[in-house]
Image 1: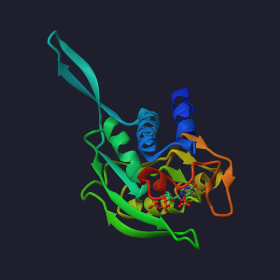
Image 2 (image 1 turned 180 degrees about the vertical axis):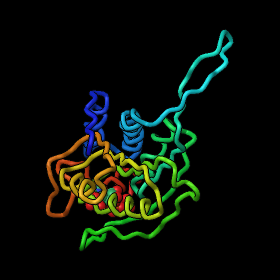
Image 3 (image 1 turned 45 degrees about the vertical axis):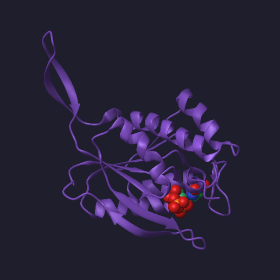
Length: 206
Ligand code: PRP
Ligand code: URA
């Protein structure tokens, strides 16, 4: 299951993010802003619990988010979404999974895994700006479900049909929220039209 969040405010920022002329400072700001909007939509159906709050006037019946939340950025580009999601859920814990795509095979190689302990009841939110072949996201979902996590969602910025299908095939219960489902992958397994290499554009490495 996937949701493409097509709000004009997101699509406007996504147009700026895609632009090859956008430098790394602005790219980072836009990634943060888009992440906040997409996560806002992704958390629409999160479980809430009723709480009574004493206002200066009376007792108000209110709602608070019931589950602990763990955000898992996939290193390195996922870090570019961390500020945006923590702006929305400042109490979230953060786990890190390091993956890079092997240049030849395009398969993910895991090089770091640090998830918070005793959080298998939490809602896990895996964030990575790009869902291309889906290899990295699927490997991240394998790692967290393998550790006993039962509730997880994926938030990305740009995706494509191949990546979404890969997640749907391997983790059919885990929804993907994205700002765009692009056309396809090219021969180098880059998303078309996409935005290029998200990590390099975020961190100014190329
Ligand atoms: C990029 C991106 C995703 C992955 C997507 O990371 O941030 O993690 O590629 O591709 P996939 O869906 O085909 O797995 P990259 O390997 O470039 O590493 P980086 O974040 O360190 O730049
Ligand atoms: N990783 C990226 O950064 N961009 C793509 O288009 C595909 C994988």
